[in-house]
Length: 344
Ligand code: SAM
Image (cartoon, rainbow, N blue to C red):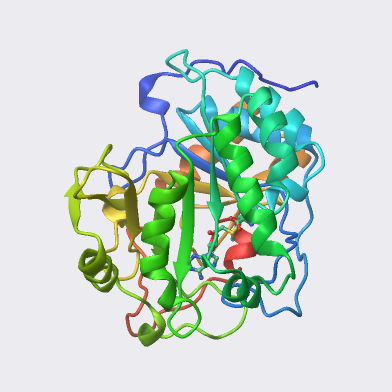
């Protein structure tokens, strides 16, 4: 596969990605399709399909190389549903050959609904993927399938999770978005699931990023409630963060077996430690999930800008990263794209 800059040209430390709030940006999330084979009720209306064009695998690779040459060390592929994207394994193979500015392999991860992971976990691991995060919003099949609106999805995802674990795509994280009235009854079941399946379950507070209009503060299941409910059945101890930009608050079970995490962007926002920037499936930079503007990196590439010009554009764009989101505040505006079209 031909790429413009497979080995990123080193740049001076001053050119590494930082924003005007002093945050170092080293974590890139790339959506490689906004198609999805699930219609999760809290995410999609069920009426809207893919909305944005996809780039070629070579184009994603060239854009990712630019970010790596500016200090990105961690790349997470996402979507839509990234396992639907043809050329994914080849993309992972190429990304695994990249080196960070320090000369290390990238930290390569992928977020998936797990539906196709059963057969893809092995090839992805062999291609050089380090870890996967599987989204799973219920531990019982009927509730799960009411959420995904796909019959048979629970068994498929469970098989995918086990295949990923067996392939060594670990530590295996399971992300569960809790939405009151849909799956808030699953909290305790997930705590047992984490221990039984030897996975880290992370609960995520629901954010106003859905295609429809479902979000309200009352529908969010807050961190405090999750911790106290699990603590009543399985006592928890808070664990120290592994790194400053870690999004999840970590908890271990008192007997030492298993771990859960809680990502609380609504009740305990972590914007001050944000190290992320996103690239949409059509090649736009988003500096925050809640950005009101997008930055057309791909458009510039298509017009023939050089790698150095594109790097300068990325640098300037990231400088303007928003200080924080404004969920729940008066005047809050939803972004123009919903989560499935941004890349979670
Ligand atoms: N299809 C892949 C998957 O299911 O993991 C990747 C894309 S999906 C949009 C990424 C993650 O975003 C999933 O864990 C999903 O549950 C989460 N998500 C979707 N809408 C959300 C919302 N409004 N608030 C919080 N998380 C959301």
